[in-house]
Image 1 (cartoon, rainbow, N blue to C red):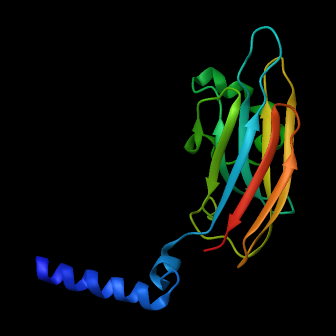
Image 2: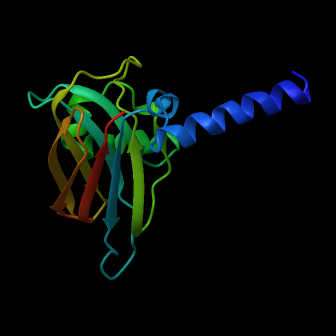
Length: 175
């Protein structure tokens, strides 16, 4: 593509955006649906602090796993032996090694789900559950369940946490 051709395309694109007065159809078609999840891990008590294992996943109201969004665990092989402490996630999970990363300490975190299932297909519109679970050696166990709807309208939901999870805020943005 030469410079003149590039400038012509750029001018046509700018005119399209200016004429629309809103987001272009191209931008809307390429933007995936997303569920942005913000949550806080509480500081531990006194004594030696072990960072919690944390799982964030999406499931159907019937309890069927849709996708593991994040799994924070000890990365060494010996860390796998503590995965059953994430009770609910462990019973339904299918692919822990593909999404796992190291544990994190206290603080605020954000993870995003792209609206796809474990097979890489966009999920059907409908009701789903955002699930967060945390477990820590010599510490508390916590689980948060937050219903949300995949569809054509945006939504925001919040829940108080349990265990090491202080609170959760989820924001769904349709494609």
